[in-house]
Length: 407
Ligand code: PLP
Image 1 (tube, helix red, strand yellow):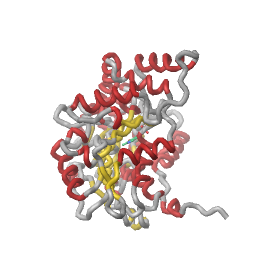
Image 2: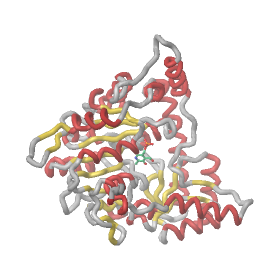
Image 3: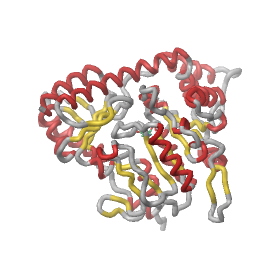
Protein backbone atom coordinates (compact mmCIF):
# COMPACT_ATOMS: atom_id res chain seq x y z
CA UNK A 1 0.00 0.00 0.00
CA UNK A 2 1.39 3.39 -0.97
CA UNK A 3 1.03 5.78 1.92
CA UNK A 4 0.63 9.46 1.20
CA UNK A 5 2.44 12.36 2.79
CA UNK A 6 -0.04 12.91 5.66
CA UNK A 7 0.80 16.60 5.70
CA UNK A 8 -1.10 17.04 2.45
CA UNK A 9 -4.31 16.30 4.38
CA UNK A 10 -3.76 19.54 6.30
CA UNK A 11 -3.77 21.68 3.16
CA UNK A 12 -6.89 23.81 2.91
CA UNK A 13 -8.44 23.64 -0.53
CA UNK A 14 -8.15 27.11 -1.96
CA UNK A 15 -11.51 27.90 -3.45
CA UNK A 16 -10.53 31.49 -4.19
CA UNK A 17 -9.93 31.46 -7.94
CA UNK A 18 -12.27 28.54 -8.69
CA UNK A 19 -15.03 30.27 -6.68
CA UNK A 20 -14.44 33.48 -8.56
CA UNK A 21 -14.57 31.61 -11.88
CA UNK A 22 -17.81 29.82 -10.88
CA UNK A 23 -19.54 33.02 -9.78
CA UNK A 24 -18.43 34.86 -12.92
CA UNK A 25 -19.59 31.98 -15.15
CA UNK A 26 -23.01 31.90 -13.43
CA UNK A 27 -23.38 35.66 -13.80
CA UNK A 28 -22.40 35.49 -17.47
CA UNK A 29 -24.95 32.74 -18.10
CA UNK A 30 -27.73 34.79 -16.53
CA UNK A 31 -26.59 38.00 -18.25
CA UNK A 32 -25.16 36.97 -21.61
CA UNK A 33 -25.17 40.57 -22.93
CA UNK A 34 -23.46 42.17 -19.95
CA UNK A 35 -19.81 43.13 -20.30
CA UNK A 36 -17.46 41.70 -17.68
CA UNK A 37 -14.25 43.55 -16.77
CA UNK A 38 -11.65 41.47 -14.96
CA UNK A 39 -9.74 43.48 -12.38
CA UNK A 40 -8.78 40.45 -10.34
CA UNK A 41 -6.01 39.00 -12.45
CA UNK A 42 -2.40 38.93 -11.28
CA UNK A 43 -1.16 38.13 -14.78
CA UNK A 44 0.34 40.64 -17.18
CA UNK A 45 -1.40 41.53 -20.44
CA UNK A 46 1.18 43.52 -22.45
CA UNK A 47 3.43 41.60 -24.88
CA UNK A 48 7.15 41.14 -24.28
CA UNK A 49 9.49 44.04 -25.05
CA UNK A 50 10.85 43.98 -28.64
CA UNK A 51 14.44 43.58 -27.48
CA UNK A 52 13.49 40.50 -25.42
CA UNK A 53 11.72 38.97 -28.41
CA UNK A 54 14.76 39.64 -30.61
CA UNK A 55 17.17 38.02 -28.16
CA UNK A 56 14.75 35.14 -27.63
CA UNK A 57 14.81 34.51 -31.41
CA UNK A 58 18.61 34.78 -31.51
CA UNK A 59 18.80 32.25 -28.71
CA UNK A 60 16.64 29.83 -30.69
CA UNK A 61 18.75 30.46 -33.83
CA UNK A 62 21.90 29.58 -31.86
CA UNK A 63 20.38 26.18 -31.19
CA UNK A 64 19.95 25.61 -34.91
CA UNK A 65 23.62 25.58 -35.80
CA UNK A 66 26.39 23.27 -34.70
CA UNK A 67 28.84 26.08 -33.97
CA UNK A 68 26.53 27.85 -31.50
CA UNK A 69 24.42 24.97 -30.21
CA UNK A 70 23.87 24.76 -26.43
CA UNK A 71 22.95 21.65 -24.51
CA UNK A 72 22.72 21.57 -20.73
CA UNK A 73 23.75 24.93 -19.36
CA UNK A 74 25.10 25.69 -15.88
CA UNK A 75 22.39 24.82 -13.30
CA UNK A 76 22.95 28.19 -11.63
CA UNK A 77 22.40 30.11 -14.87
CA UNK A 78 24.63 31.48 -17.64
CA UNK A 79 27.34 33.86 -16.55
CA UNK A 80 26.08 36.57 -18.96
CA UNK A 81 22.73 36.70 -17.12
CA UNK A 82 24.08 36.30 -13.56
CA UNK A 83 26.58 39.10 -14.17
CA UNK A 84 23.91 41.43 -15.60
CA UNK A 85 21.65 40.72 -12.61
CA UNK A 86 24.39 41.30 -10.02
CA UNK A 87 25.48 44.59 -11.59
CA UNK A 88 22.08 46.07 -12.40
CA UNK A 89 19.78 44.79 -9.67
CA UNK A 90 22.20 44.90 -6.75
CA UNK A 91 25.60 46.58 -7.20
CA UNK A 92 24.04 49.65 -8.86
CA UNK A 93 22.02 50.15 -5.66
CA UNK A 94 24.97 49.71 -3.33
CA UNK A 95 24.25 46.07 -2.48
CA UNK A 96 27.37 43.90 -2.68
CA UNK A 97 25.86 40.86 -4.38
CA UNK A 98 28.12 39.10 -6.89
CA UNK A 99 27.27 37.03 -9.95
CA UNK A 100 28.20 33.78 -8.16
CA UNK A 101 25.59 34.55 -5.48
CA UNK A 102 22.77 34.44 -8.09
CA UNK A 103 20.82 31.26 -8.87
CA UNK A 104 18.73 31.56 -12.04
CA UNK A 105 15.53 29.49 -12.13
CA UNK A 106 12.23 29.08 -13.94
CA UNK A 107 10.43 31.52 -11.67
CA UNK A 108 9.80 32.72 -8.14
CA UNK A 109 6.88 30.40 -7.41
CA UNK A 110 9.16 27.35 -7.51
CA UNK A 111 11.93 29.17 -5.66
CA UNK A 112 9.76 30.52 -2.83
CA UNK A 113 8.07 27.12 -2.60
CA UNK A 114 11.23 25.01 -2.71
CA UNK A 115 13.55 26.98 -0.49
CA UNK A 116 11.99 25.70 2.74
CA UNK A 117 13.48 22.25 1.97
CA UNK A 118 16.74 23.48 3.49
CA UNK A 119 15.30 23.85 6.98
CA UNK A 120 14.63 21.36 9.77
CA UNK A 121 11.13 20.06 10.14
CA UNK A 122 10.74 21.75 13.51
CA UNK A 123 11.77 25.17 12.16
CA UNK A 124 9.30 27.83 13.28
CA UNK A 125 7.94 29.81 10.36
CA UNK A 126 6.64 33.39 10.41
CA UNK A 127 4.27 34.33 7.60
CA UNK A 128 2.60 37.66 6.84
CA UNK A 129 -1.19 37.77 6.77
CA UNK A 130 -2.40 38.54 4.13
CA UNK A 131 0.18 37.30 1.62
CA UNK A 132 0.90 35.20 -1.48
CA UNK A 133 -0.29 31.73 -0.32
CA UNK A 134 2.72 29.69 -1.53
CA UNK A 135 4.83 30.24 1.61
CA UNK A 136 2.17 28.81 3.92
CA UNK A 137 1.15 25.88 1.75
CA UNK A 138 4.67 24.63 1.00
CA UNK A 139 5.49 24.58 4.71
CA UNK A 140 2.27 22.64 5.32
CA UNK A 141 3.45 20.05 2.79
CA UNK A 142 6.77 19.84 4.64
CA UNK A 143 5.06 19.20 7.99
CA UNK A 144 5.82 22.50 9.75
CA UNK A 145 2.30 23.91 10.08
CA UNK A 146 0.62 22.05 12.94
CA UNK A 147 -3.16 21.70 12.71
CA UNK A 148 -5.55 24.13 11.03
CA UNK A 149 -7.68 25.57 13.83
CA UNK A 150 -10.11 28.48 13.49
CA UNK A 151 -8.67 29.58 10.19
CA UNK A 152 -4.99 29.42 11.14
CA UNK A 153 -2.20 26.84 11.40
CA UNK A 154 -1.22 26.26 15.01
CA UNK A 155 2.58 26.24 14.54
CA UNK A 156 2.89 29.31 12.32
CA UNK A 157 3.60 32.75 13.64
CA UNK A 158 1.29 35.08 11.73
CA UNK A 159 2.56 38.57 10.99
CA UNK A 160 -0.66 40.57 10.84
CA UNK A 161 -0.50 43.29 8.22
CA UNK A 162 -3.37 45.67 8.82
CA UNK A 163 -4.35 49.31 8.58
CA UNK A 164 -3.08 49.73 12.15
CA UNK A 165 0.54 48.99 11.14
CA UNK A 166 0.28 50.37 7.59
CA UNK A 167 0.48 46.80 6.30
CA UNK A 168 4.09 46.41 7.45
CA UNK A 169 4.03 43.78 10.21
CA UNK A 170 5.44 44.38 13.68
CA UNK A 171 8.18 42.16 15.10
CA UNK A 172 6.62 39.02 16.61
CA UNK A 173 6.42 38.29 20.32
CA UNK A 174 7.49 34.67 19.74
CA UNK A 175 10.87 33.95 18.07
CA UNK A 176 10.69 32.43 14.55
CA UNK A 177 13.51 30.67 12.68
CA UNK A 178 12.39 31.63 9.19
CA UNK A 179 10.63 34.89 8.34
CA UNK A 180 8.87 35.45 5.01
CA UNK A 181 8.52 39.07 3.93
CA UNK A 182 7.07 40.32 0.64
CA UNK A 183 7.43 43.95 -0.53
CA UNK A 184 5.83 45.43 -2.55
CA UNK A 185 3.26 43.10 -1.10
CA UNK A 186 0.83 40.84 -2.87
CA UNK A 187 -2.05 41.47 -2.20
CA UNK A 188 -1.90 44.73 -0.21
CA UNK A 189 0.47 46.65 -2.51
CA UNK A 190 2.21 47.98 0.61
CA UNK A 191 5.91 48.83 0.49
CA UNK A 192 8.46 48.91 3.31
CA UNK A 193 10.96 51.70 4.00
CA UNK A 194 14.65 51.12 4.70
CA UNK A 195 14.03 51.83 8.40
CA UNK A 196 11.24 49.23 8.52
CA UNK A 197 13.39 46.60 6.80
CA UNK A 198 16.34 47.45 9.05
CA UNK A 199 14.21 46.52 12.06
CA UNK A 200 13.68 43.07 10.58
CA UNK A 201 17.33 42.65 9.61
CA UNK A 202 18.48 43.62 13.14
CA UNK A 203 15.89 41.28 14.64
CA UNK A 204 17.01 38.38 12.42
CA UNK A 205 20.64 38.96 13.37
CA UNK A 206 19.85 39.09 17.06
CA UNK A 207 17.72 35.95 16.91
CA UNK A 208 19.75 33.89 14.41
CA UNK A 209 16.70 33.86 12.14
CA UNK A 210 16.65 33.98 8.34
CA UNK A 211 14.57 36.38 6.21
CA UNK A 212 13.17 35.06 2.93
CA UNK A 213 12.49 38.30 1.07
CA UNK A 214 10.16 38.10 -1.93
CA UNK A 215 10.78 41.11 -4.19
CA UNK A 216 8.80 39.84 -7.20
CA UNK A 217 7.20 43.29 -7.60
CA UNK A 218 10.28 45.49 -7.00
CA UNK A 219 10.12 46.90 -10.57
CA UNK A 220 7.01 48.88 -9.57
CA UNK A 221 8.94 50.87 -6.97
CA UNK A 222 9.43 54.40 -8.28
CA UNK A 223 9.92 56.27 -5.03
CA UNK A 224 13.72 56.70 -4.87
CA UNK A 225 13.63 56.59 -1.07
CA UNK A 226 12.22 53.05 -1.01
CA UNK A 227 14.55 50.03 -1.12
CA UNK A 228 14.07 47.63 -4.02
CA UNK A 229 16.28 44.99 -2.45
CA UNK A 230 16.69 43.91 1.17
CA UNK A 231 20.44 43.93 0.49
CA UNK A 232 20.31 47.73 0.47
CA UNK A 233 20.08 47.34 4.25
CA UNK A 234 23.53 46.98 5.88
CA UNK A 235 23.99 43.53 7.39
CA UNK A 236 21.15 41.91 5.42
CA UNK A 237 23.69 39.80 3.54
CA UNK A 238 24.24 37.82 6.75
CA UNK A 239 20.57 37.01 7.39
CA UNK A 240 18.53 37.19 4.18
CA UNK A 241 17.98 35.73 0.75
CA UNK A 242 15.99 37.47 -1.97
CA UNK A 243 13.59 36.08 -4.56
CA UNK A 244 13.13 37.88 -7.86
CA UNK A 245 11.13 37.22 -10.98
CA UNK A 246 11.06 38.42 -14.57
CA UNK A 247 7.30 37.73 -14.61
CA UNK A 248 6.06 41.16 -13.63
CA UNK A 249 9.28 43.02 -14.45
CA UNK A 250 9.30 42.01 -18.09
CA UNK A 251 6.06 40.12 -18.75
CA UNK A 252 7.67 36.65 -18.43
CA UNK A 253 4.70 34.99 -16.70
CA UNK A 254 4.43 32.52 -19.57
CA UNK A 255 8.13 32.52 -20.49
CA UNK A 256 9.32 31.59 -16.97
CA UNK A 257 12.48 32.99 -15.46
CA UNK A 258 13.44 34.18 -11.99
CA UNK A 259 16.35 34.00 -9.58
CA UNK A 260 17.44 33.90 -5.95
CA UNK A 261 20.25 36.00 -4.51
CA UNK A 262 21.97 34.10 -1.69
CA UNK A 263 24.94 35.92 -0.16
CA UNK A 264 27.90 33.70 0.71
CA UNK A 265 28.04 35.38 4.13
CA UNK A 266 24.67 33.90 5.11
CA UNK A 267 25.07 31.06 7.64
CA UNK A 268 22.73 28.44 9.13
CA UNK A 269 23.32 25.79 11.80
CA UNK A 270 22.80 22.08 12.45
CA UNK A 271 21.45 20.61 15.72
CA UNK A 272 24.94 20.62 17.23
CA UNK A 273 25.37 24.31 16.43
CA UNK A 274 27.86 23.69 13.61
CA UNK A 275 27.78 26.44 10.98
CA UNK A 276 26.86 25.83 7.31
CA UNK A 277 26.83 28.07 4.27
CA UNK A 278 23.27 28.62 3.06
CA UNK A 279 24.68 29.32 -0.40
CA UNK A 280 26.44 25.93 -0.47
CA UNK A 281 23.30 24.13 0.77
CA UNK A 282 21.10 25.70 -1.92
CA UNK A 283 23.76 25.08 -4.56
CA UNK A 284 23.63 21.38 -3.63
CA UNK A 285 19.85 21.31 -3.73
CA UNK A 286 19.52 23.36 -6.91
CA UNK A 287 22.10 21.39 -8.89
CA UNK A 288 20.55 18.10 -7.76
CA UNK A 289 16.96 18.95 -8.65
CA UNK A 290 17.21 21.61 -11.40
CA UNK A 291 18.96 21.46 -14.77
CA UNK A 292 19.00 25.13 -15.65
CA UNK A 293 16.55 27.58 -17.24
CA UNK A 294 16.46 27.30 -21.02
CA UNK A 295 19.14 29.15 -22.99
CA UNK A 296 16.82 31.29 -25.20
CA UNK A 297 14.85 32.32 -22.09
CA UNK A 298 18.05 33.44 -20.38
CA UNK A 299 19.04 35.39 -23.50
CA UNK A 300 15.64 37.11 -23.43
CA UNK A 301 16.01 37.83 -19.70
CA UNK A 302 19.49 39.32 -20.15
CA UNK A 303 18.04 41.70 -22.77
CA UNK A 304 16.07 43.37 -19.95
CA UNK A 305 19.37 44.83 -18.70
CA UNK A 306 20.46 46.42 -21.98
CA UNK A 307 19.84 50.19 -22.32
CA UNK A 308 17.09 49.46 -24.86
CA UNK A 309 15.61 46.74 -22.65
CA UNK A 310 15.52 48.99 -19.59
CA UNK A 311 13.62 51.62 -21.54
CA UNK A 312 11.11 49.20 -23.07
CA UNK A 313 10.44 47.35 -19.83
CA UNK A 314 10.00 50.64 -17.98
CA UNK A 315 7.40 51.74 -20.53
CA UNK A 316 5.30 48.64 -19.80
CA UNK A 317 5.58 49.11 -16.03
CA UNK A 318 4.65 52.80 -16.47
CA UNK A 319 1.51 51.67 -18.27
CA UNK A 320 0.45 49.42 -15.39
CA UNK A 321 1.39 52.06 -12.82
CA UNK A 322 -0.88 54.55 -14.57
CA UNK A 323 -3.73 52.04 -14.32
CA UNK A 324 -2.90 51.55 -10.64
CA UNK A 325 -2.96 55.30 -10.01
CA UNK A 326 -6.39 55.53 -11.69
CA UNK A 327 -7.76 52.73 -9.52
CA UNK A 328 -6.40 54.32 -6.36
CA UNK A 329 -7.75 57.73 -7.31
CA UNK A 330 -11.20 56.28 -8.05
CA UNK A 331 -11.39 54.45 -4.73
CA UNK A 332 -10.26 57.47 -2.71
CA UNK A 333 -12.59 59.84 -4.56
CA UNK A 334 -15.49 57.58 -3.59
CA UNK A 335 -14.52 57.93 0.08
CA UNK A 336 -13.05 54.46 0.57
CA UNK A 337 -9.73 53.67 2.27
CA UNK A 338 -7.04 51.79 0.34
CA UNK A 339 -3.34 51.01 0.20
CA UNK A 340 -0.99 50.23 -2.70
CA UNK A 341 -1.58 51.72 -6.13
CA UNK A 342 1.75 53.51 -6.25
CA UNK A 343 5.00 51.56 -6.27
CA UNK A 344 2.77 48.53 -6.78
CA UNK A 345 0.32 47.05 -9.33
CA UNK A 346 -2.28 46.24 -6.65
CA UNK A 347 -4.80 48.38 -4.82
CA UNK A 348 -6.13 46.94 -1.58
CA UNK A 349 -9.50 48.36 -0.67
CA UNK A 350 -11.24 48.37 2.69
CA UNK A 351 -14.76 47.41 1.60
CA UNK A 352 -16.37 48.04 5.00
CA UNK A 353 -18.18 44.73 4.51
CA UNK A 354 -17.48 41.02 3.94
CA UNK A 355 -15.08 40.48 0.99
CA UNK A 356 -17.35 38.04 -0.85
CA UNK A 357 -20.48 40.16 -0.33
CA UNK A 358 -18.65 43.10 -1.91
CA UNK A 359 -17.38 40.87 -4.71
CA UNK A 360 -20.92 39.66 -5.54
CA UNK A 361 -22.44 43.14 -5.48
CA UNK A 362 -19.69 44.56 -7.67
CA UNK A 363 -20.06 41.72 -10.15
CA UNK A 364 -23.86 41.90 -10.30
CA UNK A 365 -24.23 45.67 -10.33
CA UNK A 366 -21.19 46.63 -12.46
CA UNK A 367 -19.88 43.48 -14.13
CA UNK A 368 -16.49 44.07 -12.48
CA UNK A 369 -14.43 41.18 -11.12
CA UNK A 370 -12.09 41.84 -8.18
CA UNK A 371 -10.31 39.41 -5.83
CA UNK A 372 -11.80 38.91 -2.35
CA UNK A 373 -9.10 39.60 0.24
CA UNK A 374 -10.09 36.70 2.48
CA UNK A 375 -8.37 34.38 -0.01
CA UNK A 376 -4.97 35.72 1.10
CA UNK A 377 -5.37 35.24 4.86
CA UNK A 378 -7.77 35.99 7.65
CA UNK A 379 -6.59 39.63 7.90
CA UNK A 380 -7.79 40.00 4.30
CA UNK A 381 -11.46 39.67 5.17
CA UNK A 382 -13.22 42.97 4.62
CA UNK A 383 -10.88 43.84 1.77
CA UNK A 384 -10.63 43.24 -1.97
CA UNK A 385 -7.68 43.47 -4.35
CA UNK A 386 -7.85 45.34 -7.63
CA UNK A 387 -5.14 44.60 -10.17
CA UNK A 388 -3.64 47.14 -12.58
CA UNK A 389 -2.59 44.51 -15.14
CA UNK A 390 -5.60 45.04 -17.43
CA UNK A 391 -5.86 47.34 -20.44
CA UNK A 392 -6.17 51.11 -20.01
CA UNK A 393 -9.53 51.10 -21.74
CA UNK A 394 -10.98 48.48 -19.38
CA UNK A 395 -9.48 50.13 -16.32
CA UNK A 396 -11.02 53.49 -17.27
CA UNK A 397 -14.39 51.92 -17.95
CA UNK A 398 -14.32 49.90 -14.74
CA UNK A 399 -13.32 52.88 -12.60
CA UNK A 400 -16.19 55.01 -13.93
CA UNK A 401 -18.56 52.27 -12.90
CA UNK A 402 -16.80 51.64 -9.59
CA UNK A 403 -16.99 55.27 -8.48
CA UNK A 404 -20.75 55.38 -9.14
CA UNK A 405 -21.17 52.06 -7.38
CA UNK A 406 -19.17 53.05 -4.30
CA UNK A 407 -20.87 56.44 -4.00
N1 PLP B 1 5.91 36.00 -5.50
C1 PLP B 1 4.80 36.74 -5.46
C2 PLP B 1 4.57 37.65 -4.32
C3 PLP B 1 3.85 36.65 -6.49
O1 PLP B 1 2.72 37.37 -6.43
C4 PLP B 1 4.10 35.78 -7.57
C5 PLP B 1 3.14 35.62 -8.69
O2 PLP B 1 2.10 36.18 -8.77
C6 PLP B 1 5.26 35.03 -7.56
C7 PLP B 1 6.15 35.16 -6.51
C8 PLP B 1 5.55 34.03 -8.64
O3 PLP B 1 6.27 34.54 -9.68
P1 PLP B 1 6.75 33.66 -10.91
O4 PLP B 1 5.85 33.96 -12.04
O5 PLP B 1 8.17 34.07 -11.13
O6 PLP B 1 6.67 32.22 -10.51
